[in-house]
Length: 515
Ligand code: XMP
Image 1 (cartoon, protein in one colour):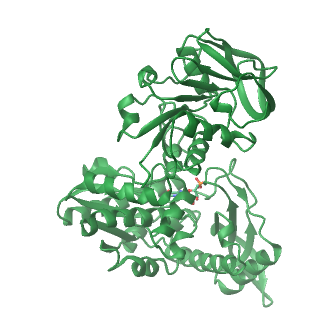
Image 2 (image 1 turned 30 degrees about the horizontal axis):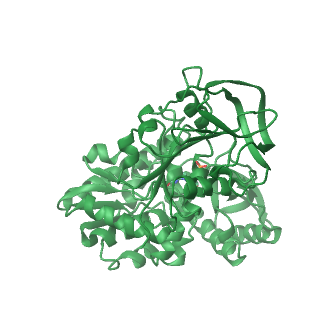
């Protein structure tokens, strides 16, 4: 079996850091994204480190304010590839000068190869790359060799002769650099001497082994929502520690039709874990009475969730860990690579805060992965397709889709409308092509006419979006016949609704959920 090889990607705040990670994994090498100032010990982790990539970033290396790396990483005797800002960091450290470029460059440009080298092996003598920079390396010492240049950017690809540092001003990870994959491949296989062969199956094995040794014979509680992330986390843990895992499913009354039954069927008495169902419907509804402010709703739900977990954990013996199905995009949404927290757009709760309250250690086995990678693992673990392909569903559930007051009757209206949306979107064969499709109940009544009678009833908004990772999204161009059917069925079948509208906003500037 191939030996584990790891590449560390230090994140200086580029919107493309995740993309570098994806590409490396697509090439069959495992990688982790780490904060820009991680120490050599953080990078080494389990002694399988083969190379380091320094990502791009929005800062400037010469104004003192841009994020820095721990300079000790340059003494690790490992190949380092600096991309854009990462190139500038490395070149400055090794004696070069960085300054504002005479011409800022955003978009495609042609580079000329100046020298043959492994990094550019297999590329044409001139090749297209994609640039996005305002600064660039202006001067280098004689220890550097120029590998490629353009008219605007004479030092577009360079290498340091003594230290195995490579710098490229362009972005090999974006699809607009047509031969970018070749460059990354060269770095991984020729320069870092990786062998490749890593795949999701390996992730399962490695993760289960690591979980086993970390947890020992302690108990673990996991908030199981039945979504693909927490389900995969549950199965990995079940493989590692079996019945030491207590998966807790909370029915908060804010879930969709059939959801509780589906989750129970998938997990109770299966996978050797201990499944606990907590019926907290009344508790949540009571706490939410009169709460209309979106953040207050989210915080209230988050708090009650935590209280319930605390109560459950106290009843169980030897619990030392809390496991969560956090993914990489969740991590970047809640932290800023530049240190401080990023602006809070919404308080995504995912039982956050629980570790402080309970004094539990946190386990997040999926925190370096993307949703589609988690879905691949879910398939390998044999989770039912209904869970693998399920659209994301927010932690606060239907409460953030009932705009305004959350009451039992309003939840009933939304649940009925939502059921029709899912059923019809599936029947039209587009469920798996879109990120999410759901209904939102507005706090607005409008006038209608049904069977010669005036009605004054609720409006349901339909929301369907396409997205790669939930961070940006565009409204889905659902076929008109599907929209017509949805509107027709919802108005006819859901008591209390006389109008349906379609949300045609992208994210940004809107968000996917309405609250
Ligand atoms: P927004 O509304 O922020 O949503 O554009 C982005 C994605 O995240 C989901 N979402 C949540 N997921 N806990 C979650 O686990 C939450 O509190 C939460 N709020 C939003 C949302 O459904 C979309 O897929």
